[in-house]
Length: 84
Image (cartoon, rainbow, N blue to C red; front, side, top):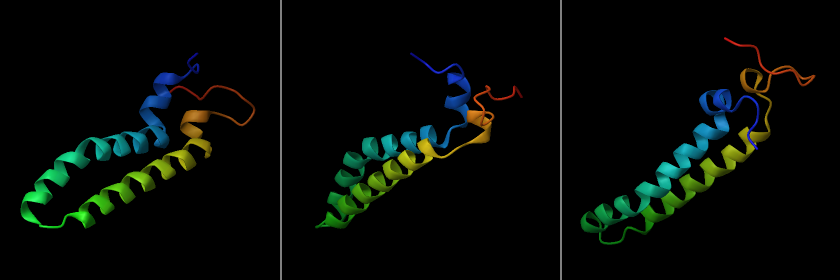
C-alpha cells in the first residue's frame, strides 16, 4: 500500500534521491571498472572507491529515511503536508 502523498515523497524526499544515486553507482560500476581496467593495470582502487561510494550513499539514504522532512512529512500531529 502506498502512502497518501507518494508523489510528493518521490519529488522531495532525500532518501529517494540518495537511493537513485546509489543505483546509478551500481549501474556504472562495471562500466567504470572496464574502462579503468584498460587504462590502469590494477584498478583495485577504482573498485574500492565505487564500492565505498555506493555504501556511503546507501547508509545516507537510510538515515535520510528516518529524519523528519517538513516538506514530505507534514505536521508532527499526523496531518498531511500542505499543498504548494
